[in-house]
Length: 410
Image 1 (cartoon, rainbow, N blue to C red):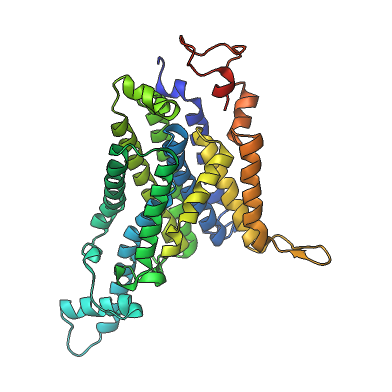
Image 2: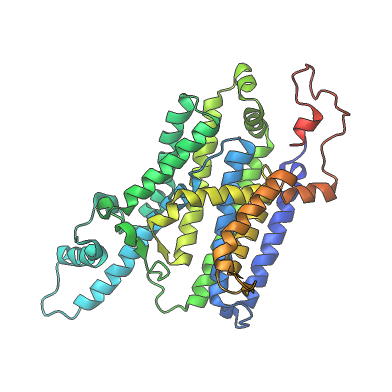
């Protein structure tokens, strides 16, 4: 391929410009800027939406470009949230305990402070001892490393076991879903070390920022989410634009042929699977401090299925399509489930959108699959003239087994 990275990927500059304009507009209209045109809660909603767009990009990389339909990537998203949540909860509880014991007649020892913190955090599950998984919870630097290392290692081990056995297609999807279910069931147990069904709460209270209003903190996290999304988009576009991108597309279209040409198919798949797991974890680490709470229900397999639906609706194999799908469905979900849409009385029955939203989402997914397999992103290709070449049914390669025009358009 010739030309610079940006010349081969004009969508990158357009996306970054739109994201920057959107970030600036939201900031100026926020309560932190004094205009109060957008509430603090909605700024948090928009920040969380940007995080969901980032994990959708990860899903598009692994599914839309590499052809690996992972139904477990939201598990990595949740693990990233748990890793940063541990530090947030520990540091906040430590400050509360230190303040309450400061006026004691006899100054508490370090061990007494640690025991008091453990009682505050784990008393809800009948314990006061810190599990080994909390060994680094007192260090922000180490927990930030855990955000990357833990999900990355989990994806590396799982991917190595699955890809070396050449598990593909629906069987691999079932395995990733089973991994997600097993992780969620483990976290539901009180002895998992992460407070079981109670999860980690109070994550919106940032240690050291007690005097700063939530309006300002919400804008900070919104900026961080926007920066992470922008960097994630550029990184993903760079990964799929060169030779590496051509190889993973080849694996998606004809894995056996790519292996016959001498490429290490398992190595490419393992790299993209691990990379996207780390991207998903970073998105989760930014999402849950804005949500304020994380529990095992967030890692349930249904969440990963929703993620695949977002990418399919937005347009698989198009990074901007994944962003569009995640943003559209996320904001519509907030609107419909937030009770803002009036119910529709039909005499004998009343349609309550809080109950019917998932049905509407499922119908939308089916319609897109049947009538618009390129998703919403395909509309941009249509109006921009970026369409498949009209070869009048001729082969797309030197041999009769090459993909024909009709297949390439799918």
